[in-house]
Length: 440
Image (cartoon, rainbow, N blue to C red; front, side):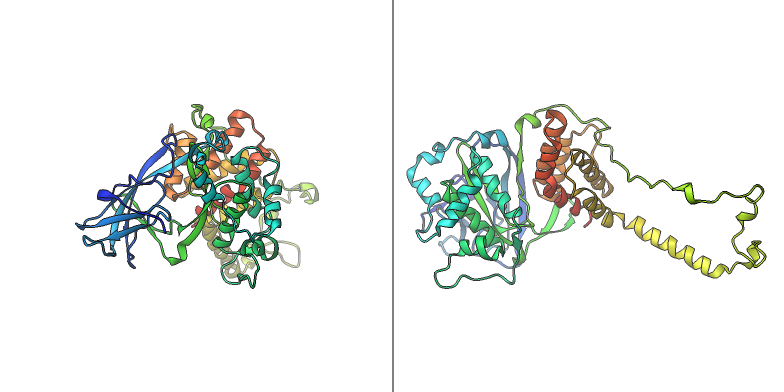
């Protein structure tokens, strides 16, 4: 299905996922395959594929966007390694909110029909649910976000083993949305695509891999990740006129690797003050001295003793020092464990402290707490580095877009006076995902 087109010299001049107006950063990745396949694994924004072998050709299917690897005779060949150069996008919320339906690729009727098609057998209550979720909103951006949030706000559970299979004429999406409410990534992503298409928003289902597990930093200061079949994943892409295909992540427990930021905030040159980044220290409880008896005059020196005798006097010689030493040693060991292992447990202390709170000041305390944790594991913010620059550095380290999204919302509270309570409610999951990373 679909036409095959050659990528001459490995250069991708055949398909584009975003417009030239989308800001991007240039990245590259080297893939070394333990199990080989006659196709390329590549990220959104692919520009070029580089291989050491000669005579390798690349064929792109314009329908599935799968890139096959072929030898000089046109036969499939499996590569043990290759390099991909790509553009990593950052999406401006103003552009997404301002996207006008019916323009761009949507002016092509065939395009719209392809990416909004649904089976005639789709139960009507799926369509009704889509209209109910998106009805209160006007912009495509807000409608899509409402659908993505629906899964996270309604007790849907990520499950890979005990997943129901439709029987008879039962619909896959309908079963997940209204009956089981538990499943793996395919259940979440397929259901989101169906809900979006039900309200005429072009969307498509994408299959690939997450970034994998971080292994080490190599000698040339690049990060090494291991990607296995356990990292197989599916997600959603939504089309925005004049922007392109934008990634969304509906599956519970997974985060979107791409950033959604306000251009107006990003262009704001103001920096936070030291006070903004101050982390509130846990308050030590004050000792209630109302029930402590006062010593009689002259009793202070005698009370300095540690062991009691029947006549009421205290004598150091009467002390059994062995159990005391054991207690002191145990306390010291426990303190050492807590101190040296603090990066493991402090993130969860902060999660317990802030996650469930919804008052106006929570965001202004939780964000600096995250900064402190990042600093404690060596990801320090350089002198003169803005929060946005630092967030970009953190996202580059973790290969995510969460820190920039979180920072954009935090700065909206600081600079624009937006509701801290509302922004925290939208940001708490991003914040939790990031602060958990500091404990690993």
